[in-house]
Length: 68
Image (cartoon, rainbow, N blue to C red):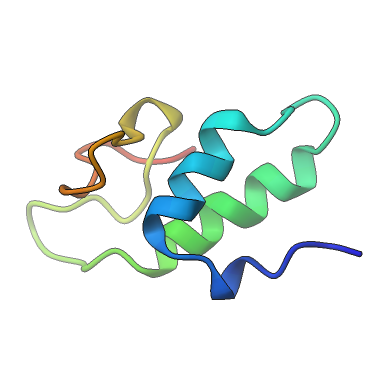
């Protein structure tokens, strides 16, 4: 059974992305990134996508670079 990432909090999604086995579950990595990206507010100072280097372990701020 596949995880339903739509029910995860942003902190849980960040944790999942930071700890997932990327080689074993590349499709899940993309689903997590897509779910995170769908929750970002879009504005002139916010990118439309996030990269792996933006995982926040404090879970208090949004990433500043895209998850790709």
